[in-house]
Length: 113
Length: 112
Image (cartoon, each protein chain N blue to C red):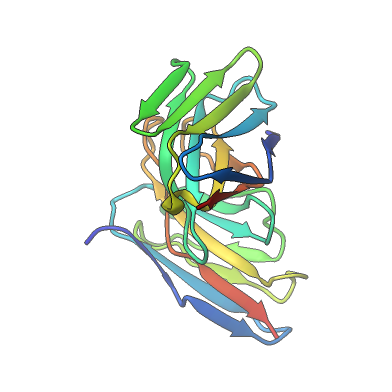
């Protein structure tokens, strides 16, 4: 069964703690993305990666970090520097061709207690 | 950077009627325009997309129209059904591997 998996589905964190969200895909996609979604807002791009060991900042990268050690995996770390981390986080992937579709995972809801 | 405006934010229609959602964008170099449907607590799912070399695309009850001169595109859903109730997002991209820029979403409510 091909697709994008994100874990965990729900995550709770205390203020001041770093937390890492997992994203795995078995679609053989080169490009992977992290978006943040807040209530009543569209999706905003945090980071993206087009190739292993390389990634670029999106529109709201401050307070986040990523790594791309494997093609299949693109974990996102929400650091204590992120002032308002409570949100719904969505991972996506696509091929590099302009005709390729971007597919989304099921999301992780992060709540800071 | 790209700026995407989406209207309306909420749309309520009677079952069986049509629904239209509109988006405008700012970057004339953009050439990829997908529409996503998101159900509560789930990730967005692509329902239809259009590229700048065509003006209209249809898939059963769903259609998208694109006016590159005016920099706007629209989603049309005909013969609406209860399962069409969801939040719909338009997005704009350069067609390559860069990320998409999303509108703020339209909450579509189908009244029985």
